[in-house]
Image 1: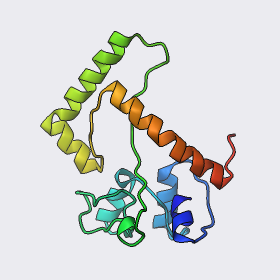
Image 2: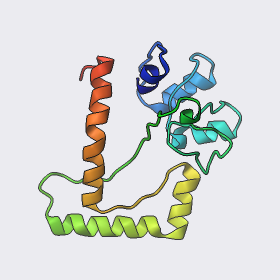
Image 3: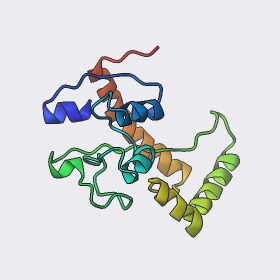
Image 4: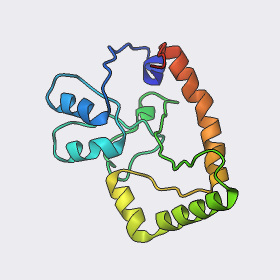
Length: 154
């Protein structure tokens, strides 16, 4: 949706139950393109089954250094995906602090970090507070895209 707004184009949206079914349809030639996280597309790109046209992140990916960013052709365009670890509301602060420390420690390990990078992730390993601040900044932007798309919850 963000790409459509900024590029002034319209696509026919096709709903899939996840990235794997969408990628299967792309490889089979039944759809023309998908926006997919690097981690979901990297294997097919490396195998020559699909061609990466552009990255939605602000900078090039170390996994696909020859693939330009969309922002190089459409200035100002950037939309990154991210993963986070969540715990139930009301989880005691000491448990959250310990989880945060352990996750950051694991992500900082050279072998773990390298494996995540090979898979297409960009490991961060922030504190719970830093992640909450990041997420709070992301939600209004994503909520506006959902609103503009007309999507409704099931």
